[in-house]
Amino acid sequence: MSIKINGYLFTGPFPLPTTSRRANQAESVFAIVQKTGPAWDPVFRLLDLGRTGNKGVVFAEHPRADEWRGAEGTPVSVYLLDTTTQPEAAVDLDKVVNEILANYTPPAALK
Image 1 (cartoon, rainbow, N blue to C red):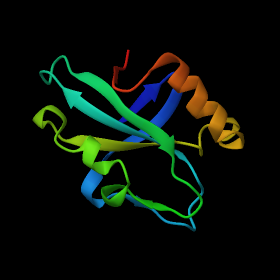
Image 2: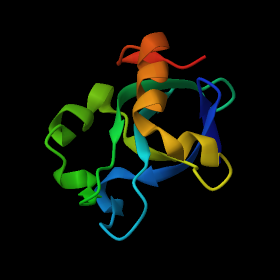
Image 3: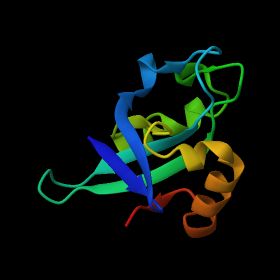
Image 4: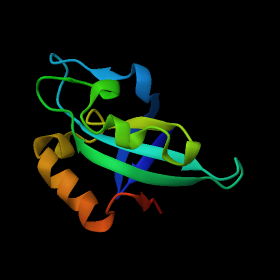
């Protein structure tokens, strides 16, 4: 399943405890998302957004990982910007982050 955030397609959900992005992988934008509510009417909340960096990232060891875990007792997932289908987004990842944060200040319900 994928999720659109501000018109950008993010792939996921990937489990926070086991997801990483290696240094040899292309840098991307990550979204930390919490799914709450009933299965027939879920609510997705953006908890954090950022760039993976060029040195890679282990999400379970991210400096803000403790802020993501256990939010309201519901597990969180990692979503990654799909730059293969949106190569124009890969050109300026800061622009993508800034555009999303202009519309969603975490924590924010995604619409």
